[in-house]
Length: 110
Image (cartoon, rainbow, N blue to C red; front, top):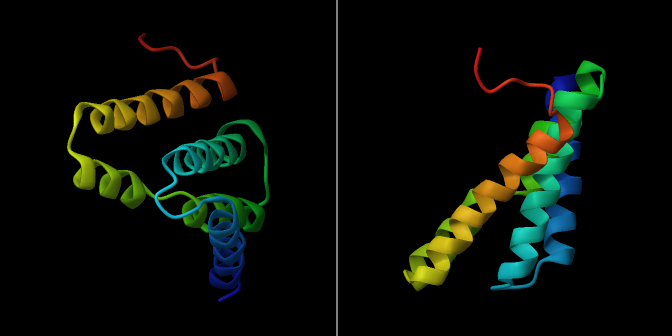
């Protein structure tokens, strides 16, 4: 039960930050908040050595609630144009780049 409460507390914090910093149909805001969420999750998963409860608060709670693929999917579904496709692929590419910058030691092939 304690773990669920920690995840819920992180979820409340993450969703409130998203609500206050991203306006309706704010493509740039969604883009930036999603990259911030990837950064937070990447730091706690790959760089820092958090306790189990801290990890649960920050990754599935905070970052999970703050970021959402559904916003990107809605943008793509509403617009269905070349710009929406580019937006999607830039989001994925930037997310992977952030994770690589956080943890560049991983080798791509062995």
